[in-house]
Amino acid sequence: MYTRTVSGRRGLRQLHVQSLAALLGCVVAMAVAAPANAAPDCSQLPTVRVLASDQGVLESIASDRRGRLFYSDTNASRLLRLDRPGAQPKVLATIGGILGVMVDRDNSLVVGFDNGTADALVDNGNAGLMRVDPNTGQTIEIITKGLDMSNGIARGPDGAYYASNDFGNGIDRFLNGQVTDNWSPVQTPNGLVIDSTGRYLFAAQTFKPASIAQIDLSHPENVTTYVAAAPADVAAGPDGITRDGADRLYVAANGAGEVWRVDRARTICALARGFPFVSSVSFGGGNPGFPRRNLYAVTFTGLLVELANVID
Image 1 (cartoon, helix red, strand yellow):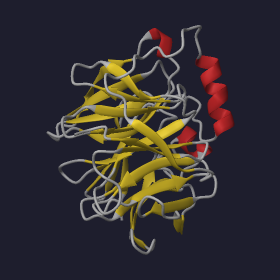
Image 2 (cartoon, helix red, strand yellow; image 1 turned 45 degrees about the vertical axis):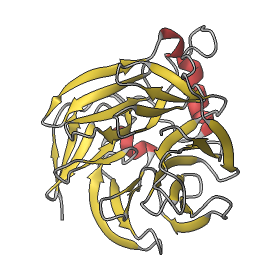
Image 3 (spheres, rainbow, N blue to C red; image 1 turned 180 degrees about the horizontal axis):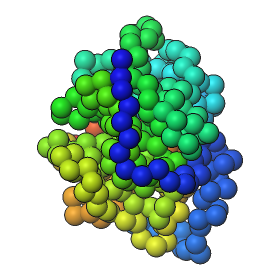
Image 4 (cartoon, rainbow, N blue to C red; image 1 turned 60 degrees about the vertical axis):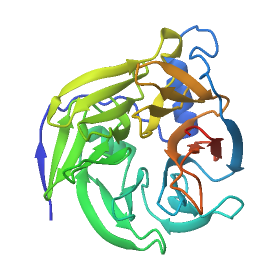
């Protein structure tokens, strides 16, 4: 069982986009006259190849210690698994309202479910997290209901789960059977990742001038801007996010159709371009599947993309 507490202020929700057409409208509304390729290229660019296409409207991607890739298709409510390069993707489960996918400490999957646009707009707490067996696709347990949305998912060093609602102005937290609604007041949070020290949570901010928020886990009221994109990239729409062992951040810039790296000096460069509506990124989990040095991305247009040798 869980209980739900409310912190922060409920306000009007910005438009959340879960489909290609709706996101296009939002980006056009936000767009400014700007030169192409505003973020400079990274100094070393990876080899990029498409591993799979026509996979659906893909929202989130993760990889386990066996190197398997897991990703969500929101259009068909599917959780898919790809075991190795050249294999055929397997439909692991059908999950209504699927969004975020994360590999937990025990190598099980944590999947966001029952996510809906109308639900997130009114903060009615219908979304949740479930634990899924990565081998069979069977539901192991319902971790919690009571979330506004489970778009981005992360787990803290104390075992707390964090879930984002990019409609709104807050991140939810679940710990010890209790959901804290709007635990941290972050505008339009999407992808989530925690740094290697376990002190900070980073949140990509989609429907505002493109930026990444930094939240102190011990003092969630302390929200600062970790990095903001240049004016030319105001409508880049940061979506999914991950990090490497050096705490460099990697961001799916949805509206820009680019994958960004944010260095420790808080500078942004582009690792790949030309992938409209790229939505999530994840490093491979290792052999025998997909190597840890490679970054993998998915798009709303159904592509699964490999960026090779991103890290040494």
